[in-house]
Length: 388
Ligand code: MG
Image (cartoon, rainbow, N blue to C red; front, side):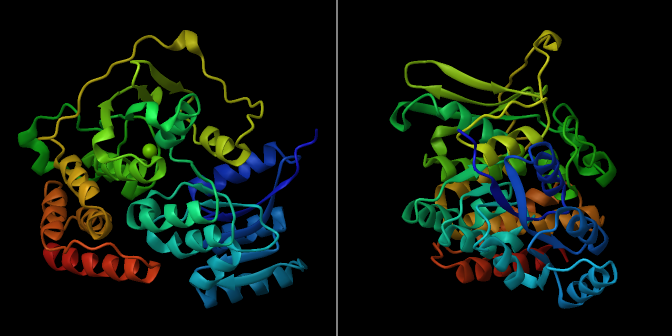
């Protein structure tokens, strides 16, 4: 039987996940096509993508960028592409009747409304944006259940867990083990953490990623966000999600079952594989992303050092409280990371800032996206005042 063509709306098409998604579409033209692209601020890249993929809709961040793209398309003689902008434009992309699947890869809470709208419109979502799940996971998973919409994780660890969970029942799961590389400071003496520079923190040992996520890997807050993401995606309490530091990053994550069996997922360190898995689920198309098992020499595992990485403790605390605390964890971190990158605060002030914001955050469970965004703004305001 021929697989029907899946037409994609890609939110965050000019970012690294967006580009990897387009390279998958390129490799599997019989399976995937492009219906809509939400491209943000990079007009040059948006223009090139629009010309190459001929989507029905392209969305940019602002009206000015949109009219710039429109006139360039006109000059190039490209017709039939609707150009929209802003949050509304992203929602147009994510709810487009011609789109069968939405890739949510806009960094930060900017992609939240469009992702929520996609679920309400009944579109399956491939989720690369962990901030969405951390800030509004309670709302998104409830909507997904109500509309019977699958949310397929693209984050490599959660994608691995999703694969390992296919072999057992939910009640048989004992522990979800998220692997962590441990970042560049896994063995740095604790008394030297204050002197860490942005340049040092931006050097990740195994993955090449955006600036914020690279710093979040260095503080291990990224793993903390992933703990929360796992709780929401897989409907387990924080006590059932644990972290193991695995410097080789070969095993992307593991699931331990109650009988003692542990299943692990191994593959190349290449985001195209989790993207392909999410796009094609429940099928597994043949790909060239092979892993050389013979090159696998040794695998190390060690427990995370909670003293060295206080962000992990903060994340567990936020995960237990849920709601506004998870929103504040994410928002305060983003503000603190920005301040660190601008050399306004030391590395060790990142967890201190988050801790103080969490301490001032009331326990609340927003039920609308607008409430989530309001809690996000309030946490950012508090964090901004602290780093100033
Ligand atoms: Mg990850």
